[in-house]
Image 1 (cartoon, rainbow, N blue to C red):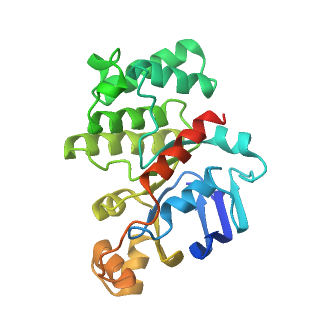
Image 2: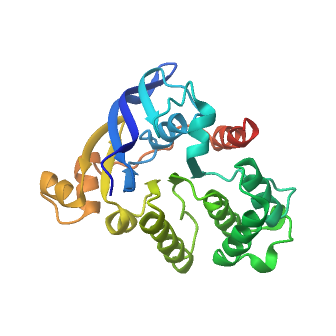
Length: 267
């Protein structure tokens, strides 16, 4: 793992009128590491990712992604990362193959290499037999698998995964993580992910940050988090610092989908 930081966040704030969604957050992600960003519903995870990926501007604070400022160098930042959104942003009127081909073309993946990667990824996510079918006829799980394939097509330096395995069966979930881990190891691809499955973070994250009510409440390696909270596993540590109260999600799904679609429309 390299010592260079591919993500740097300092005193980041994002307000929505009276709501402070992200409140003076600071953290960094090293190049080549697997970094888990955890928190209850409405904690500020997705809002932070939106700012890192140019979808939202910060109210204040500084961000650097691969050395670039997402508020000023949007094109350079976007070339650096791939993303699997929490909500689907696929084009329902295109086939599975066309969705991947269009996305690969946007990222400048050369035609022959693009086809090679599309073929591999469609087989990898179990959609090869449905490559010519329109996405509007896919189930939720199939769309999720296609989203994952799309995020990986250009082998980005940095991959954002916002609850990527939500709705996937255990077999597909394990298969996806094996491939992501292989890319992380072989290509030194940095992975920044959110999940509500604590076992995923325990198994795959080099370091973990926990955010709650817009603030980072704990961060470090799994060993460090367990020591700081005097607990035996990540779930216990998570509950120790965030409490046991059931949370309501802040922000609507329609708004999240609109922002996700804008990511590709602005490219």
